[in-house]
Image 1 (cartoon, one colour):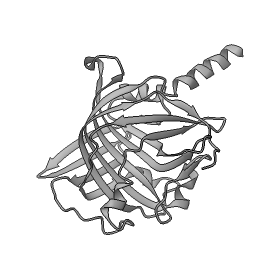
Image 2 (cartoon, rainbow, N blue to C red):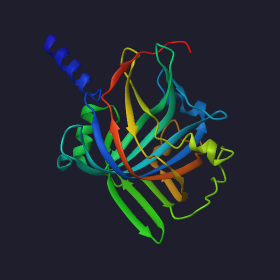
Image 3 (cartoon, helix red, strand yellow):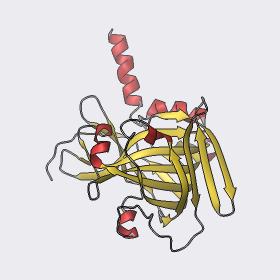
Image 4 (cartoon, helix red, strand yellow):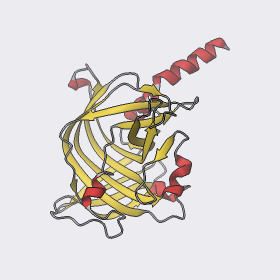
Length: 261
């Protein structure tokens, strides 16, 4: 029994992102959807607050064209290239010293690389699963289509990144792009809950993150057909693109909550 407990603890420690990781993002497209904050509450563990704007919380679908992901210190030749679709909620965590950390609660991660599914689920709690990927273009438009093994569509999104002076989506709760930019990502931190109520906090470091708005022409997000989203209409809130980004994730650290601001 002691051996089983030791193995379990070793696995738990490994899932805390135990080493820093480097990658290059050729392109990131982040599309945020607004929901009443109460709808998102069941997806946010105790200790986290929903980062809200006028009673709305936000789920962002981030599409990431990733190259050369590898542990820091490894040569680029050993890095992995893959596509990632990440589904995240904007949240806040107040640590025991009273600092208010703004970041993301990862709901699900999808990739076209089976190797990344295995490695991602080994060292993080980001809930990776494998999808079949199709990326096609027509003129200035790009369509990203992902599907599960059984053929179900998990994501179907078409965007146009060529337009200038892009207006906010007509349904957006934001009054202007300046407000919308605060929910464009990436956030400095991600938060994964531990059984004792603490969180694994992973900090991301990047340079040159200058997002510009894009137009979403059409979309379907399979996640929104599941509970607790089912029956609530998602509101397209904003969409941005960034390109050519060097990114680093520091090793995870355990953070306790409960401090006063």
